[in-house]
Structure formats: C-alpha cells, structure tokens
Length: 270
Length: 270
Image (tube, rainbow over all chains, first blue to last red):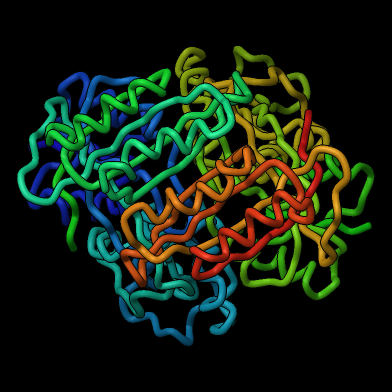
C-alpha cells in the first residue's frame, strides 16, 4: 500500500502515516494539492491529511481540496506532537548554543529554549533541520523535530517532549477514492453553506439538536468573494447511512444552499 | 505610538500595521507571546495579531494569549495577502530559475511557479527571503514576499498578486491594555466553554437567535486535556454594552462554565 503525505521524509505527517496505517510505503509530497492529486490519479492508494491542530487551528486548504476532488474521508487519527531535541551522536546538552527548526516548532518550544539559553534559528522545515544539522556536522547546534527524523538520519535524541504546551495534537484524516460504511462508533464530516439571514445557523443546528445527535466540531468560514455568506464545517457522531442521521441531513438540505458529506468513518478512540 | 507585530521587518503583519494604524513605530517580535508581553509590559502601546486566514484557518495560539493576558481587542483589519515576485534590479522574468520563500507562500503560488517553470526552494520566512536574495546577489532567483519587503530592501517587483487563489485574506485584531466602547457598527468577540451534553451548543446559540443577534464567526475547539469538553469562539454583531447584547451574555452565562468577553470594537468595513 502507498500512502502520500505532505512534507519530506521524517516529517510529523510521515510519523502519523506509520502510526495509523502500519508498515506501508510513504510518498512525500511538496504541497497539499500534490498529495490529493496522487490519490485522485491512483499514484497512491491513500493520503493522510492534517485537518486541524490544537494550537494552530483548522487547515482550510485541505477542506478546499476535499471539496475539489471526489475522494472520501475513511478514517481519523490524532497525533500528539512531541518535539525532540536532536543532536549529533556524543553532543551533550551543555554544548548546545543554538537550535534550528521550522518557525512554528521553535515558537512552540520558546520557553524551553529560553530556560536553557539556546538561541533559536529558523530553517524551512522540522525534518529538514535534522538533515541540515547532519550535513553541517555542527556540535554546538541542535535540531527540533520528530523522533522519526532523528532515527532516519542516525542522530541522537537528548530530550523528547520539549514543547511548552503539552496540549499539542494534530488531527489527520485518511483519504481514499472509495467511501467506507463504518460499523461501531462512527463520525461523519459535512460541509454546507447557508444564505445569510438572522437565525440561519440556529435553524441548521436544530436538525441535529432535535434528533439528539452530538456535534464534535463546528466551524464557520467566511466566503470572501461573497462577504455575507458562510461555509460551515460540522462533524457529528454517527454514520450518514443511519436512519436518524439520514433524516437530519435531509432536513438540513431544506436550509442549506450546498451540502456535501465528506465521509463517515470509525471514530478515533486513542 | 509603538505597535508590536510577529515577524521581521517587511512581514505581511508589518504591512497590516501600517495600513491599520498609519505612520507608527513598529516593533518586530520573534514569537506571538513576545508580542503580547510587549503590550502587557507597556513596551509597546498596541499589538496587531493575526487571528485567522481564509486559507490557513484560525490561529488558536493567539486566542490562548488573549485569555492569558488582561488585554482587549479594540479593532479588526482584513489584509488581502498579495504575494509579489521580487528580484534584484534589472533581472527579467526569463532569467528566473528558482524562487525562494516560506513554504506556505510557495504553496500558495505553486500553480504560478509550475506554469513559469520556476523551481520552489523553501527558506524560513517571506521577508527573510528578500534579505537572503539581496545578500546573495543571485540573478537567477526570485523571492516571494510582500510589497513592503521589496521596498525595504530596494528590490524590484516583477509581478504582484501571483497567488493561485485570490481569496487569500488574513484577519488581524488590534490589542491594547484598555477596552474601547465603540460607537456605530460594532462587533464583539467572546470565548466560552460548555459542559458536554446533548444540545448544549444549541441552547447556547439560542441566546443570540432569540434576540435576532447575528453571528459572524463560530468555532469549536476541543480541549484535549478534557477530551469531551469544548471551547467556543463566537463573534457577534453589536457591542457588549448594548442592552440586547448584555441580556444575551447574561443568558449565556446560565449555560457556560466559563465566559469571557475579549472586546467590542468597530467592525471593519473595508
């Protein structure tokens, strides 16, 4: 099985692929659209797309790509992002003067770096920082990246979990050409638009509340071309083919201008 | 007046500061928390914090920092992100073999780069890519960054607006130590948590719907430490001190476990 992800070898996304799919062949992609195209054109069997991070928010671009392609969400996975302090073999913590990584990773470890008087220096990528460190041979520098990146380049992990906020999770969606019919506890992701009118969203949410269907995500996104209209992302508990969910979706169809079911899939339970 | 922003000189955030505040002194900050600390410690008079991008989503970290500090939202600004193709003076488009920039900017121009057979190469920052280009003196390379970055480093803009999707807006919030009481058309931003129970969100939104108060944003954020509880971000039309809004907030207080008004401020009208 071939699974595409965005980033280079050793990226957190690649780690998520192995955790979720097991021992598969990974296909690194330079951009999100390349990753979706790979699945659409059957160059890979699936993709694992990050859709939201507990600190950085939702990745709207991947919702856009889900709407653009006729692909389906078939699963979800939550990765706890644990940043590692990575050095060349034998380097000690007291040798480290500076740390290189992607600006977002550095920002998430800024308290740790300050406490240890390590100067942050931005490079383009987390896994790339380990590659750069290995090539340079520097012994006063650490890279901040995933465990997988350290292993890939034969480098040493001095400390794992150096992020200031441990509540750092990324939610990934598994994307495939064929929909699944999940048995057991399921979730369904939908996208819809509403004409802007007072109480429009309240009416839309009533279709779930009146049927005791639990929502696990709701997010509005302004459509900038039409500044008073909104796109909504909703995840609810249950599969779209269950009678209760089917009735709720039919009911929502009475209010929504556009409604698309992106997929029903087994709920991740950790 | 001194206004802090996240990024280095020439960043899109700095451009937004000048557009919104006019001719002020800007204070570049390496991270979002440094930017908030600067305002809290009166090292700057205000900050302009990006809170959501139409492609990349909400920046939860800045919501966390708003909750952590006793600061107030006093205004909002929407910046249309227009990426520029920037070169050394005299370089022609046909000379360009590669383009350097932050991965997110490169990703947003990937179609343009493919069409022009320009190879993307990732560096740590948009404004930083112009600085690197200037220092290198390369004449086969372009940088992708803001108009402001090109002007700052005395470089030439060959084309403006090379992003593939023109619907690329970043919403910024102006943050100051003192709250304002906006006259005219206003918006209010609030954060609240709900105990997870069927229909909890529906009840919470009824406090606005029953009073014909329009929402302009709603977003749920799972609290990972307590996996079945949620934080909600809501923006509504009107100021918190207006009687109708005051009644809605009192009513919401009956359901919410935590409720905080982050600020009422004049609505951005372009």
